[in-house]
Length: 603
Image (cartoon, rainbow, N blue to C red; front, side, top):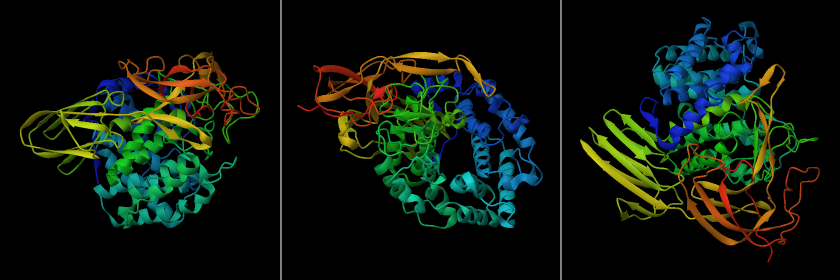
């Protein structure tokens, strides 16, 4: 089992540092200034929402502040944490709800605020947090064991999230009631094995059992709970992942969910909350198992799904992203999505619903904090992104532009011996270490000696290829990057106030109106990779760092019945109606409007 480093030990560099700075200058660093549900939250004595939204935001804002070593952000994070701690009752109850109303207050947020405080402890080292979290969960134990509270709603379907806090206090206190709490939470939690049949035929019906965020959170359930429950690890996550992906998978490793499971259609959406929480689940799955499949799946999410659904300046986002997305304008009538409204795919402050507005912020910071992990005297580079590790006499600096390029320079200084592992992705070809060719492998291991001062150069190639998708469609992938045919667009800005929430530049709403052709099929198997400088915006929608030239011909694709801004799920014809064109495909994360799943034309 690997452990995570803290923000004191692990820092981002290069393009990853640029991405985090963009995030801090955008909505993440300013949400509490402009959005009532955080600014006026019930958690800080206001009259706005007093449940998940402020904790959600802090869950990403805190590690962002500490990774950037930004004193102003750190001070604001401390202000919120201090206020929350000051309001904790002698019983341990900490949520902004009167104690006589606890039985109706969904306990999911108890798990969430515990997790947030643990993130704060890891970043700040604030010793108060141990006792605060202890008291929160001891109070939960008292409520559950006495019958004063039963898990219901979100708390029942997200029971595994409580184990982040349970494992934390088990490590620091190890009292018998902690094991009993784990058993109570598991016993009252939902059993997802019972829901599997519902995942195979999605319905236009909202249920907890098929809610996409519940499901991606659920995947880590065994990894975070089996040890304290005394159960054997069985890789249940893979079994459940396989079913979800078979019937609801997308080219970028997501499951469709707008906002419940939505099948395999390339015009169904996936909620942004699901992107960041699926990454978080996979980070814990890799840490527990060391299985490289989880790390590789995280890369696909981080390098494609995450940047695709947030604007370049990170001030606006979508609630739902679509694989084939030819416009992001409000549907004039019935929503295309199964249970989301007609604006869920526009870029804005809180399109459709505000949970993603508050939750999107954890994606990049927690990914950055997972770049390196450790176990005893072993250090593993999980994600080869530009980072610097300094821990107890070990210094490792990684210079790279991965995933846009595939060369890596590790500069290592160490006062003590340790084992160093570099994870090599399964798609790597022609691997070299300091110029010497290596056989294909999942890890390259080095024994670093005491008082070392050395450089390790690693490189490999990635080859573009076609991936089969449902309905006879294909998508293009190269390494961890998925590629799309980009669609040019105009942005139409909307500033307005609704339900006392102001949308004002730069945190206003935008419709993206497509203005270039999109009705294409691949004309042959030609794919040619071209690499470019990494822009100041790493996943720039205007200057992508890598493109793939491919050959296309137009086809009579057609629109989905009832819409003029949504391509048909399946093209009406694959017969070519135009001459062959060579077009630059963009990384999925750079193409805000795109065609990702396309057929080969008939010849």
